[in-house]
Image (cartoon, rainbow, N blue to C red; front, side, top):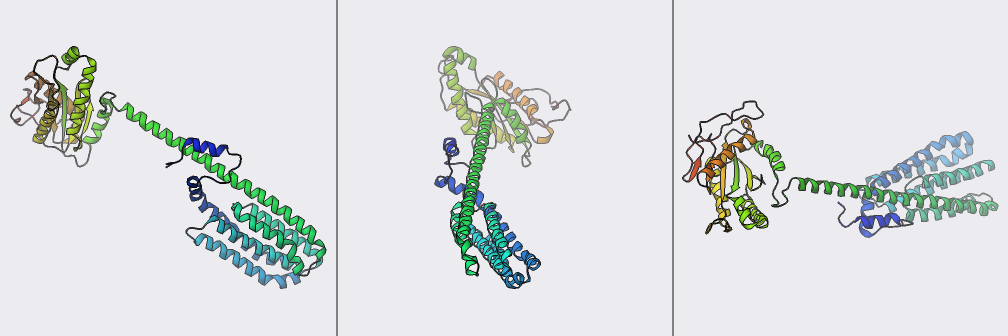
Length: 428
């Protein structure tokens, strides 16, 4: 989200004495975030100005019949123009705030003009009141709306010129021109100061929001990294036992997984390897075996993990018993191709023994119960001479040639002590 924006860049912008503008990337982001709300605010304010201009017809009537007769048509025209400007702002998909600000300012200048005309059409005592009302309404409507500062400058300049000039054009006394010009210039200065301050505040709020968003993003990244580290075996880079057991439930619960196979694999005589070559060499061996196993399971929906010291485990959903045996053979061959010499045995390389278990009915058997069955198959492979593949005692089919099975009567496997029977392929 924050791509090119760094924390240092953000803090530097926040520390600036005056936020007149941002860098190109940050300015674009500021406009994308603030333009819709800015344009909506000016559109609503312009519609309100138009409505008040029309409503003021009743006020003119109560003050003077001459003012009412002279100004009601122009008030309707100006009110309609303001509402039309407001509608056009909302209708434009990509309305530039500066252009919207100029359009809004045009509506305010028309309002000021019609008020001045109404005042000039009435008795002398009403002229001063209408003049004061026009400058106050103009200033309040401009300062109270998020008009861009660059748009407010020409609007205030025109307002400063129009305010003292219009009464003269409408036949008022020219003696008050200088005082009206002074009042208009002072009001313009105050309005521009307020608008600039509001714009700086908007930009600072935007930077503060980015600061919190950036901090939240960094915290989220750190939490994900901590979670990854807590679920990863530091030596091999594979998922650890904690993550494996949590992931096993998800894999076995997949809706399209009609069966699941469990694999548990152990490096043969690894303790003797460590005793003979040292733990550093043993760590290198573990990493090499982990890479070989991970490569063989790369294209399968499986969850391979380092389960213990020299043990690895995996669940493979939607697989048949024969395909599970073939996969186990591929894992043994992948380790054999490493050709890592075993220092405790002359002319012998590192090998693995594999235990297998399979369930045709996934929901009826807990993954840990299935893994326990595979562990019995691993003991059968070890007892048969190591460098073997073995099935647990509950298998009900004939293993492939070279695959051993622990000979034991079938027995139910339960999860959480509920006595749920697990249908595991077996060989009696």
